[in-house]
Length: 556
Image (cartoon, rainbow, N blue to C red; front, side, top):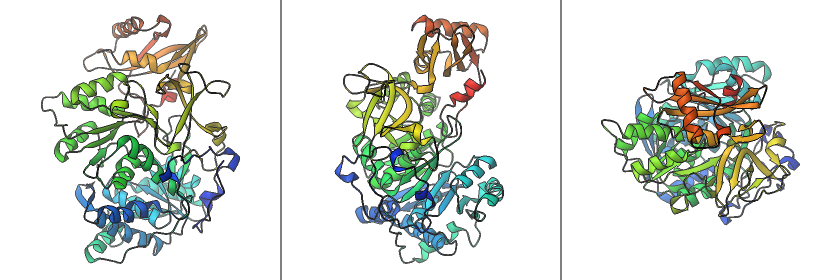
């Protein structure tokens, strides 16, 4: 059980006051010496000031684009800009330690600077996707009682409207400061001036290691998003577990990828991990497959973070008339959804690289099961990352025998703490984080994904894992993407329905549907064959790329 929390440095105790009661916390385990972080710890100070101390102020740190303008900053250059924004926050803008500060904008060097500045000034950072609409933004402003916001000037309108609508439910209207508009009060303008003229360093607020650093909202694959609370020590913990022991970055690496900072897969992979390792990160405002391929080719990216669907699309780019040069890549990480074994093999054949698959969760901040190099078993997610333990639990809540599917449960140095949300009791049980995924563990300790726990289809008494049927469909040359769900049926309880994005040039007609049914029936048990096949131009996904199966079920 979680020990008593350290004395907080916050004068605004809202976030700590709304943590779950102690009996609903997961059991936290600090099994590696570097995870024992107590006392004072400001993770932004650790990453930035500590990075300057470890690697030198002149080491390249972040480069990228903001509204068409290129930036390239060293650790020292980034610190000068961060310190100026932190001074602005804690001074004229009136951010008190513990205030929640919302960030809105695409990935860019300025978003990175704002993220670090909020934490250095003692704020609690709440990063949101720039595509969220007014109602979604209003819900987050109210849920986190956001007092201040730093917003890319190009994405201000809906946030302004959301702040007006949320104001009656807050102590006062959220104060919004725009960056990138070029005005005299633009934090980016002020920070650039400070970097040129020089200012005294800003001393990071001495937050406790277990003070709240960030509130990350889930991406909504199952409906209403939840606010996941993470501490300053959690930020360093994910770098000192998955990154240090599985990814193993080098100071000469250049990171890039597609996930936004609002998606903690992107926050870790594109900011926390490279800074912790003294490496450089390339931040792209738009990071579709074509842009990613071009970035790897032109900028010699060596570490790539993106989702399985993007790797599949990158393979298409690589087989085009003018294929990009991907030879600079040495580490490629896939997460966000299950990595099909066919994609793993295709990527390995095309590049010679072994994709690092992993499962993480917003509730856990980052990846907790993975494998790299010779430890990889294609099709398997991997084994628990050093610092974590995992089990497959049966219906009785006890560990299931190897080879028997059950609910994935995990413990480690981080864990689920929802912000004032009664769903905490569903995610945490008996000290375990219950992820909502069905897995099988083999005799070697490798974990094999079967489905989301709510993706098991029960048809005429048979349990059918949606992912198994999807894996078969994805092998067909007629299929670009596929998702499988169960839909109600009066005779069988449920039947298997496949929603298919056909390959280019493939007709969406009954003949194709019958061909796909036959393709599946030839490869797995007939009772798993889809009885219904629907064609669509695109599968419903969140902005972070996760499949929204609940929408497919809603559509029947």
